[in-house]
Image 1 (cartoon, rainbow, N blue to C red):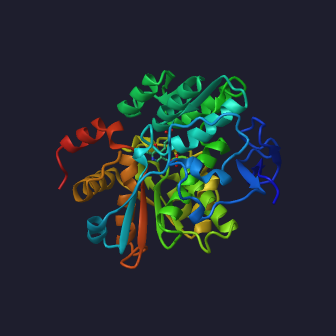
Image 2: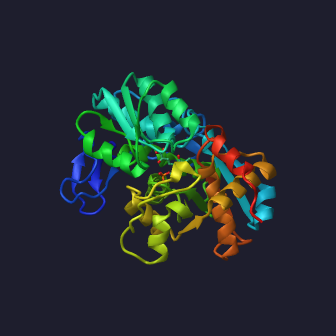
Image 3: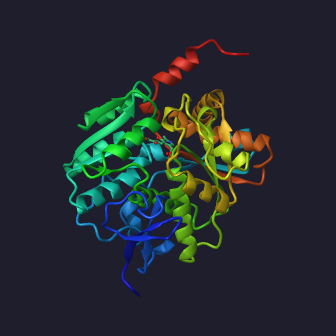
Length: 392
Ligand code: AN7
């Protein structure tokens, strides 16, 4: 067996780059890059027993070349069965993966452990990102642990207070951008290159870390894949990461078929749903994204091509839900199961309800919803919304 080797490859033209080159977009055609592993061994279900309780338990499919691993114990989050909610919604089985249990309270920590380890290995002194909140909180924490300087760009007045507090607490320099997340990301991509290592999900090493969530589902479900996975979609980095994880399990013969992946967007920020439902071949413009789920208030998802591929190749679908449906789902999850999440994390529950109404899901289906972020990050918006007079 050849030892593990990583390289970066363009998802469109196939151009490759050494793993340690600092490149965020293909220099030949401008498209997205993906980290590819060649050679190496793989874990099996029974070889995972007794390993560390973090993403690093899947070390065979993570980079082995790091000079330093920066970890806060991310990953290995709980998967809870929600029997009362399954019955209420009308599916056979429903599970909720509690990504809010990660060290800074969101799934971003999986990607940041790998991304910041890469930053250290490359000798970077400073890191930067644009964020709707969770990415900035996570990067700030991992940068602190690694001793790196950290700058974050956030849309002014549009991120949850708890997330802003986290970034501040972990010592990041915060730049509030007058505009949307899309404007903040544009600023980072155009201005930061060279000076600081960019750790938005356009960076393929982030996706390497986040793909471990698929390995976890596979392990937690006893090696089975007979379920549908439902995730909130913003930049569509996470849904592509899950798909990459399941594709790697397929390629290594650990599974025979991959689950269908469903992307849920807030109605006010749903360019991917628009694209798929209208059969467009590129992303439509979405100039003024708006939703109470500020985490996914994104009009120009940078990873849309990977996300759309994940949905199409897995045989999944994309669905949009209103803010009202998100808030209802959040409350339903909390009051029937004792599970709470921030608004974006409840969007999958709202999406499942929609898909049951539409007949895409039904009594025969097993469904896993990814509750991507912790409820304590984002309480004020939800409280304000609940205190508005109810529409009847
Ligand atoms: C709780 O923090 O984009 O589709 O800058 O925080 O991979 O973008 C957050 C995204 C879902 C969407 N749920 O994931 C950011 C940011 C929560 C999130 C998403 C985010 P992607």
